[in-house]
Image 1 (tube, one colour):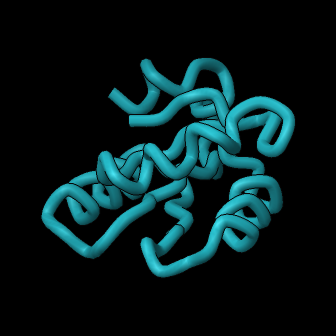
Image 2 (image 1 turned 30 degrees about the vertical axis):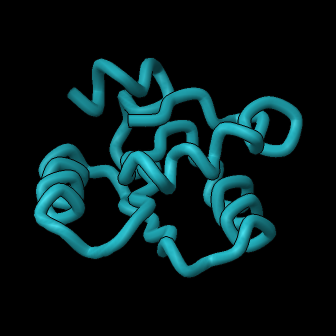
Image 3 (image 1 turned 60 degrees about the horizontal axis):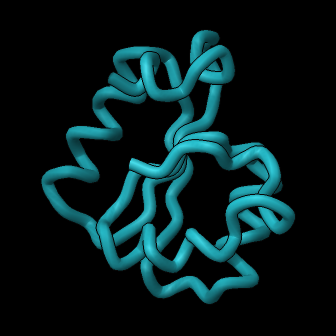
Length: 90
């Protein structure tokens, strides 16, 4: 599923996937999916402020972020100009 959602950016090993939210079963499942496909999982904790989240997304060149609904709603304002590479929220 991650390969299909990520497009060409996640087709190569070493591509980064953001994990945004509290520690939970879904976090572990997503991280295992990253490990199985050779992706790098990048933690974005729910306690980080908007500036730190934007910096992590841009610095890690994230195109895909998987997370909780409440956290993903916080990302919607960052889509576009503030995080130009981010294209997919799961």
